Image 1 (cartoon, one colour):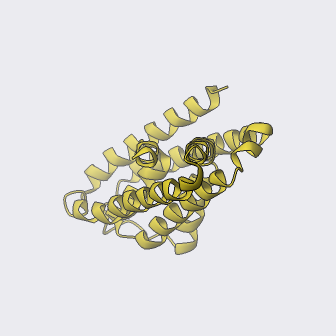
Image 2 (cartoon, rainbow, N blue to C red):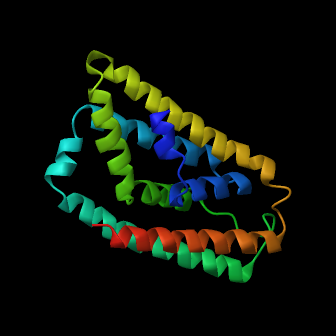
Length: 189
């Protein structure tokens, strides 16, 4: 439950997983990357890698500004897509490579992922002593369940959300969310 409370928050990664699920485009790859990445980061935190991040805060600064730049680019592309507003059927499919690169960027250029999974969940896991791996496994399973449900559950929305006018609104909302997250990220100390 602790892992889910950190993962379920609205953010760039979840918006992207939802969008790919609605488009029915490379959903399994996106879900796998997100869930495996969370599991790897949770394990790293449980192994004590969180100390590295807290000892060398410059790592988070580099990730922070890389994340801000990427979020602004993602917002720009969302606004551009809103201006062109196409339905699911008419929009050009994205290549698997493009989807993988975007998923990896949205996952690893977000400093919050390191704070949430490596530092917070890692520290919480280590409070359980010998049972820390049970805690970590539960957090990783929660991540897998969330991304699977979000990605594949979004398919149910594909038909009602197939109209260009609806995508215009979705792309505008995603763009605004990405700008807001970038601003919040840039102003965090």
